[in-house]
Image (cartoon, rainbow, N blue to C red; front, side):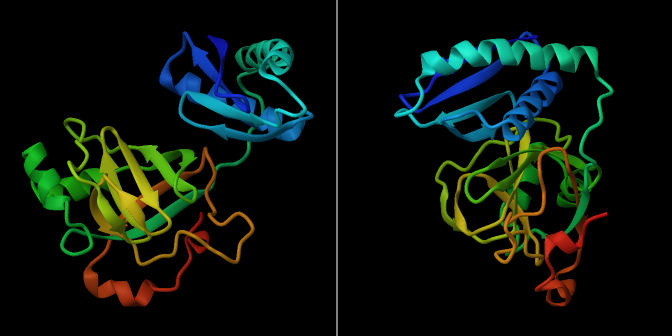
Length: 240
């Protein structure tokens, strides 16, 4: 496993993890992000971890890529060395969320298409989607969307040829080999298979969404008639 730094304009650079499998890449990326968050670097004001790399944003009036790369080249080697030699280091306790979902119909207009594409029934698509817990891999756009691995479908799911201009909040969608929970209404080219009556975003909370990378989320299929009884419930209330 090794790191490589790549400039992204004049005010950011990427840290890429190479020569490692997807799980090791993801763990290294988030370990680095946590390290930077706990030890602020002058001029660095933002860190955005993803699946296999992270974006480091800095103030170009105080730092340059050349200046920061000289520091980070040494620091990142130490972080990775520690991760490889102390694999049992204590980590934040992951939280487990269960999100009720109404699948198909007006709530999930692409469920039938996904079933036809996979040559299975809609019930089988739902069964696969609800069969396991998913690790929250990163927070995506817009508004800290919950980015997760996709279910064990037989093959990746193509995106819509023409994205929808608006998908409702609390949308449950799939594309490629990934899944996502969208906290707010937004355009999307992902296949919409369900909606949750539970509010994923809590505008009264300082963090807006309760999940963080490393937490897990599981989907629970509910009937349309159960929708009204769950309206107003917050995802933060459904944590184990």
